[in-house]
Image (cartoon, rainbow, N blue to C red):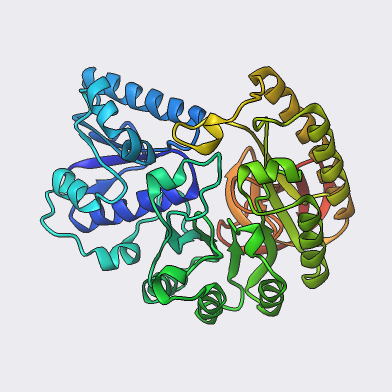
Length: 428
């Protein structure tokens, strides 16, 4: 039996693609192996979002090709965002690759790798195979994006916004809940436009309401990748009304200063963001607001950057990721003047994260002695490691308990110690 290892690079949307394709392979008699040593075929799901992601993708491909040449693997295949945009170049530069596939070529991949004649595209998501965890799952409700932000190359790779049918999503959710998944993480390039292309009106609230109706009482529903201009009071009140939707919102502002936001085409202003975050915190008690920030966008002067630091100190995002601007071929921002050097970008990332460390430290300090509900994700270094509702997997804080606890179960834990980004707890 052919054993296949799928290597997933990049974001959670890519992980969903890998799990969907793994389900196709598994259903057609192939074994999807978690180990490189056992596999005879490698499939690399690439990321092409920014320069560093493309470099990682190319390096991973080159390593796999070298291993193939040394007899470790029979075949190396490449899929994902980078192969969608740069497939021709990959074939020309690395001819040892056995197949390069775009984002919509599941059927062709299945035919080449698993010798499948026909794939039921309507049931793809129902047959997905968990590759990393089986107690939480990413539910992708759409693909592509219509916003055309100045710095972003996603529309050139994933195309316009395309919603999945509500029936398809709800069938997937029902299967996941029936299989014991404890946390559903709703994702897309942005979730707030859901349904507009398919039904002629935005249906995100209707969709989330129906998802919650399929959940168990203790199922967490987490919302990621919202679009700040489309997050309004109606949306916030709905979140607050649903027991299953955790009080956590991923609100990627990308910048805080009006001049830069305008050049980015983000549809926000500094004051508008302040008012939006105030509205969320007023409407949803104990909400955790997560954001991402891009530093070093062309035209980001020292004065603008200092103002952004003041904004972050004032607003105090509960969770924050910071990234350096990456020039992307074919984007509007690639033509802008007043570039920022990489040295300055790296320095600014450090300054932003230093501010956020202090905010996070003080937030964790407030939890000392509190009883927390923790979902256990994994075991490592003698600890059971999990998360509260305040944290998404892989990108946020964690809770460490020096006990052997069951993965995928909730526990009541008392916080007894903390660092900037971790809580240490004991069973209460």
